[in-house]
Length: 452
Image (cartoon, rainbow, N blue to C red; front, top):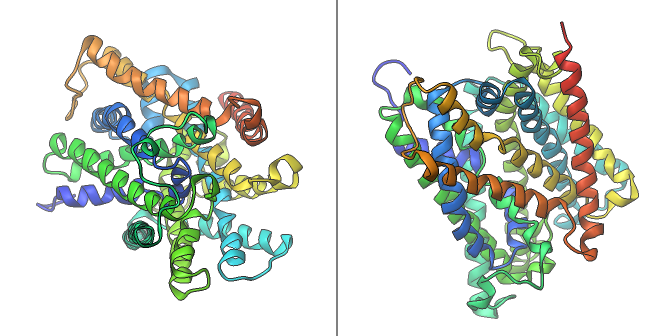
């Protein structure tokens, strides 16, 4: 940024919230029940803080467009860099396809319009390709969309929390807020633990603000502060909104897709104007969020293609702003194909959570090499200027970075692997979906590496 114009700490914090907070994740988090507060209190110090410090060091030391892909490739070489880029990219079109399912679901549930399969698919594909087209606009033209979308989704989330808790105080809570209710319930087992991935999902993306370091007066101070304050703000919004949902809906009855809107409908009335306004705002923020994420995801895929770590089509760009049109088109094609999963009987029941959790898993997988990469780069590139440096060395640093790495592995396992016979029907489709995309990714990686 030229001149004396510098980003203030409040502006940086707002950017963190804009990028990180995903309103569609509130309902799955609410399905954990009141015990989600316990898990937030565990994961903030053991995951958010180490993650925030790690990305602060790597992002300011290597302020590169490739982000996490660039860090992992530099640390561990071409193969792991390619895997990281692929996992980071593929989560996005799968994410698009899951969110497209919300549109016909809202139209049916809130507006009472019966839609056949063909009409629903037409609406879903319309959303997919509208997001693709929106992703063609330069980042400089998306700032207004970012601001408005964030204000609306935070407003809707806070409104849901206040309405739900207020209603429960008058009419009784769906689940009583006793001390026991805030502790993990062994009886629910993996059915609740599988939703922990969504909490971690709402921590991901903080490295984006590291690209603003040149525009900060004191990045060494401002970046870690913004990540901490922004992360706590996201946690606060998620917890309040989720409690509003569980105040009027028992956790086992919360729909992973429309839980938030259904909670507003219980309080205000399903056909009430407020419920419909919230539903429209919810869908609008979903679209805005996808459009904002498109540029960063596509640029990483584009760079990976230029390094021959992904197929050449991902490297196609257009215009003076070098819009990554190849990656954007591939987003649309993969998202459209993913929607066809529901044609397979075992995927038809609970299709939203199957696809949405798969996208969450891939994003978490893309971060698994992040913490080891910091250790590796300190060793192989010790003289690199680091505007911010994690203030630890030796075994304390190893412990700080080992804990979140283990948490990622455990949460991925709890989301994809059946922990008992009752979970097989729910988790087997998720596991198959993830394994299918992993195999496709390995094929793409091998083929890409052979390009001359």
